Length: 408
Image 1 (cartoon, helix red, strand yellow):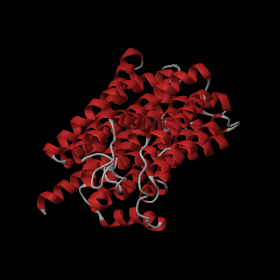
Image 2 (cartoon, helix red, strand yellow; image 1 turned 90 degrees about the vertical axis):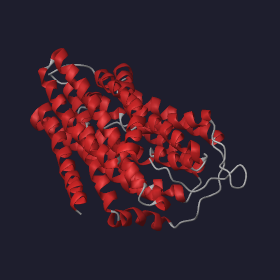
Image 3 (cartoon, rainbow, N blue to C red; image 1 turned 120 degrees about the horizontal axis):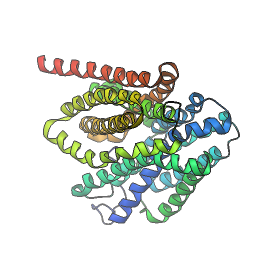
Image 4 (tube, rainbow, N blue to C red; image 1 turned 120 degrees about the vertical axis):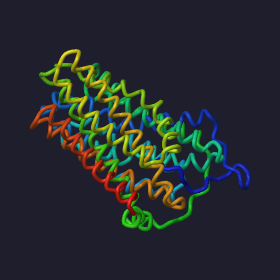
């Protein structure tokens, strides 16, 4: 997430407005809820298939639509943080997300559900608005700690959302998680409308200028393009695994309920503690070294996940270990990539983050779609092969960069 933002209204001239611990935790919770809206549909995909009378592979398009929507929202809406006061933008986005979730819950068929899911994805980009806002409201010596807390909230939402979706879905049906999530978004909108400090409107940058910035930065910054490729590949594999896991665990091989997908996701809670450690490693060894470890870890995770074909307890242990390794690799790669890109243009970090996150979630959306196709065609081994192939492409590019840098 970006660490740059336009200045907020200070408490006194030259000083940042206060951002207390309670408000930071509330913002971290908001990040988790917003990010979670992208991930709980993966756990309820099989329930959607049963409820709407479509195939599991077709129902997986619901999660894919949300991912594509999120990529679009990062490109179209996040740059508005340089134009619209953050409190207004955050509250409006949460309200729109709540409306979209309610529309999804009431969908009578798959097409309107896909449309509502895409809308939710577009509007649930609050985490990418909160981070630069928070960076402008705290003193320099607190900025890293605050942004780390917000990222932990996003990771927690990503990991817990599948457990939430699976458990609530098994008890209330596939519409239940959408209703509960809508209520959470609307309640948070009301709370933040009162709790967030007022801020001066940021500079009135023309909207077309904001939209043009991300493509222009991608053209001009090779390190940004390289970071986008790494994250798109690794995050694409990550999304392929979770889309495929929902189909695999509820299919004839394991015959488990949707809640099993959520429980499997809980093993990734370790990454909430690993992310700060990855940041310290970037400081000591550099972003490229951590990127290499993250990409290699993704390939290793694909091999461990492939052992899920053993079935029974051994297969479940392999799936748990593989998803944990994949989660750690993906988050470590995220830290390394953002450290690299934020060093490029300190004056344009928000727009750099827009370009990066758009590419990352386009990769994730493609990975989710390809994961469903690979599972339908080749089963679980096909999903694991897809993860390995995506990571291998990133590894080849990274090794070329390291070789070129060494002999330059």
